[in-house]
Length: 110
Image (cartoon, rainbow, N blue to C red; front, side, top):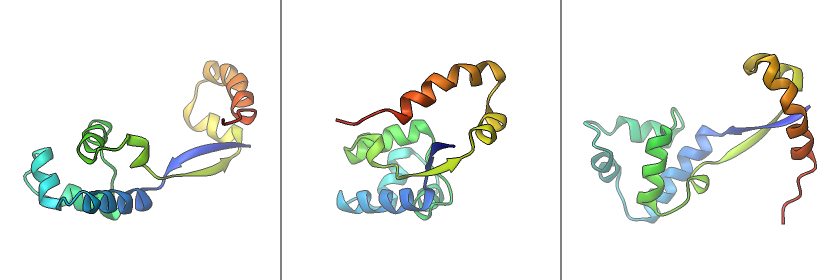
């Protein structure tokens, strides 16, 4: 079993909304900043129905003046290693992943 980090879209959306409000910005302000014709994308982000693309997340972090990892709220799911491997990885990658798996399990934060 390994811990597999997953973005929580609802919590991330709520965080985007909170950060936006903390900066005194409106949904329309974000719409204009991104050059969107309509504000629906911003509302979908805030409701957790979708997530910003990496490019938009990077731009959002600049606008909100926070690192990208302070916008994203993650959760960990414990996934059987075999399930994770078969879903996304080739056999060549799997063989190289075992040392990385050991490193993550033994990683200590400062």
